[in-house]
Length: 84
View 1 (cartoon, one colour):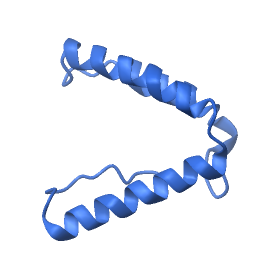
View 2 (cartoon, rainbow, N blue to C red; view 1 turned 45 degrees about the vertical axis):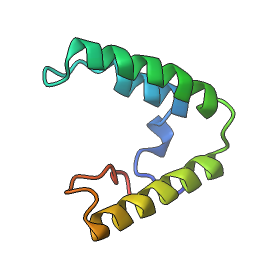
View 3 (cartoon, rainbow, N blue to C red; view 1 turned 180 degrees about the horizontal axis):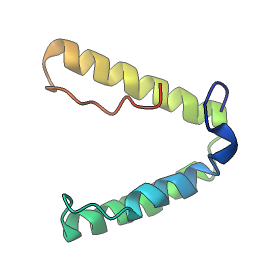
């Protein structure tokens, strides 16, 4: 991805989704982690067909969505806007 600090280490979007879904975090219940893994399988299928520009566009749209949700008070904070 253009401008990413660790672009050479990024791998595929599908692999990144799986890595996050499989991450062991004590604050996440086992059932929630299982659910995340199921969602990751679906997202990985989509990611396998998405071009980098489409992926970046989707992230940009989600960031804008959360900015508007914060502005309007629909979410209280900590939106997933990392990796800017």
